[in-house]
Length: 465
Image (cartoon, helix red, strand yellow):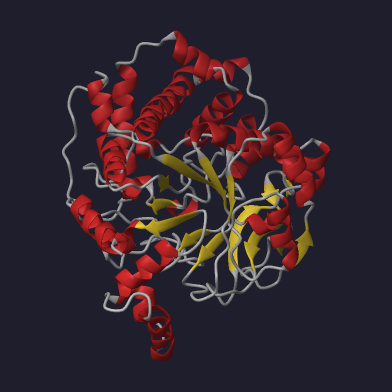
């Protein structure tokens, strides 16, 4: 039976502290999903946001973004004396939220008593790496690690570690409390019969603990990339998309048995029930751009050995549930790789409305990179609007065109259908515009405190025969 899901970033939840978090608003959302027979919640990457506040430029493949900490849960745990004032719902103000959440975490750390569970958590390799990287970064006024003085670019001495011991412990506490809160949310979702779909960016941020501690896995010299990632000119951007992430050294990774990638996916499989891998095509071919180029136009396609990677991955973790982001103008070999490994792909109706879907597909009207359904349809040329209306009119005669599009997606053959929350609420909000950086990207939040009733009514209408 096909599952129904909703795409909504955690930060877009209507919590009262400037950004959605792992607290009561998320748990309430889990109950709303259950009441509306929604089985899947798809979110965006939860790692520490990077350049332009993008969740796809994470500073770590393992750590969680501290802005998602819940003040309510800190208060319930007795770690803060009082709750901060709530603020009206509106776009995320990252600088203000970061400062306020950091202040609360400092207070909570001051009231925290270490436990054996906490000490065990801090002994994990990824925790040690990230907390050291984060501590060093803040000690250097958040400059990129390639700009740090020499003493922070080599193995730290015992004296340096003693000097920063308390700060290192604080950073461990931040990650510990985030994981405790996230685990509670996962238990709430499970109780409500909701699966969580996480999102793994194909590339990691250049200014990240991954590149800092594992430079041999990347094509970098002294931490600086000679080649960077992106995609050539396409539907979204006439100059292509110059993401700026360092390119992997796939030869070194294959020789190493893909251990870095396998550990990355293992850690994500502990967090999520389903995993969507962004930019899946790069397992087959990836766009390699000289770092000196200002756009993504002058790059070249490099062939990758995706079968070797998936042989290693499924050889170690045969039960993984992965969804391939297989969008764009792809060569046939990408689909062949996807199908050899029996991976469901994505079908986005804004790109291809009328073609039949496969039973393995995950159906979307749009994703976090697309305009809302209402914006997309209203901006189509009249002749294109007419084609869509004509395609829908026989089966969905008498329905509002937007309800008809939602029902069309719901009725299509496929493994599951994922609706963007904006489309179910009937708003024109957008999460991200590819090829652009800065506000208003990644600032979307639900503005309707009564969203649950609006959602219920929309789902009720489109589920009617």
